[in-house]
Each structure stands twice: as structure tokens, then as C-alpha cells.
Length: 96
Ligand SMILES: C[C@@H](c1ccc(Cl)cc1)n1cnc(-c2ccccc2)c1-c1c(C(=O)NCCN2CCN(C3CCCCC3)CC2)[nH]c2cc(Cl)ccc12
Image 1: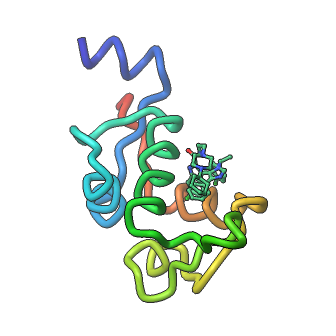
Image 2 (image 1 turned 180 degrees about the horizontal axis):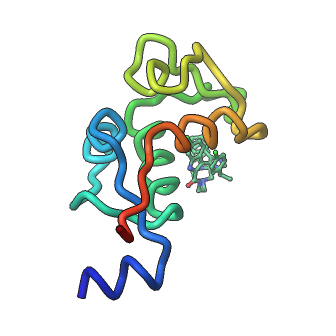
Image 3 (image 1 turned 30 degrees about the vertical axis):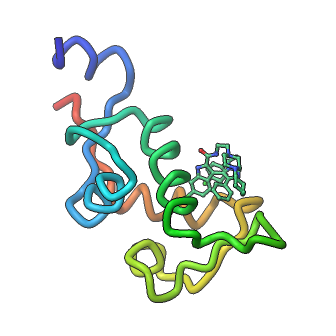
């Protein structure tokens, strides 16, 4: 029951550029929980090998759609703030 899910789990609707990134990581559908968004973004980084193999907390996203959305060439997974800022710009509540 989508309606029920929307109210019970804080479901969000990614804007198109972010939705395309999530779908490239294998996401199905158009609404997700925040946890699912983070999982698919992690998968995307791994599938596209955007993380540094030696310094695995570093993500080099310059030249990738993810970097376009973040407005960054790189970031560390140890500082999630740029990702949360990007999500604020690219997620709408699906509960409406
Ligand atoms: C704590 C969490 C996190 C979650 C959100 C944020 Cl804003 C920062 C940090 N995290 C810790 N390392 C990673 C990570 C590191 C390198 C490559 C891929 C993921 C993640 C990220 C996850 C995730 O869902 N993580 C599950 C467990 N990860 C452990 C790391 N594992 C990989 C580490 C590199 C070598 C291959 C395994 C993958 C599964 N989702 C993310 C999405 C983004 Cl935009 C950025 C990073 C992550």
C-alpha cells in the first residue's frame, strides 16, 4: 500500500538527476526511504569505482553525474555534510 508506506517510513521522491543516478545503481521505482537512497548511492560509487582503492574513504566524483550534483570533485565519506546538502536540494517528501 504505497500511501501507507509514505506516511510510515518518511518516504522521499528524488528529483530526476538524482533518480537517474539511483537507477544506474539498480534502484527500482521513484520513491525511497532515506536509508534506501544512501544504500543505492553507495552502490553507485562502488559500481562506478569512484572511490580510491587505497584510501577507501575518498570518493573522486569529478566528471561524474554525482560530482555535478554535489558540486564537488571529491569528498571523504567521513564528512557526510556535502551529501546531506545535496540531498536537501534533490529530494522532495513523497508523503504529499
Ligand atoms: C557509512 C557509510 C556512509 C553513508 C552515507 C554517507 Cl553520506 C557517508 C558514509 N559508508 C561508509 N563507506 C561508504 C562507502 C565507501 C566507499 C564506497 C562506497 C561506500 C559508505 C556509503 C554508503 C553505504 O551505504 N555504506 C554501507 C557500508 N559500506 C561500507 C564501505 N564499503 C566499501 C568500502 C570501499 C571498498 C568497497 C566496499 C561498502 C559498504 N552509502 C554512501 C553514499 C554516499 Cl553518497 C557516500 C558514501 C556512502
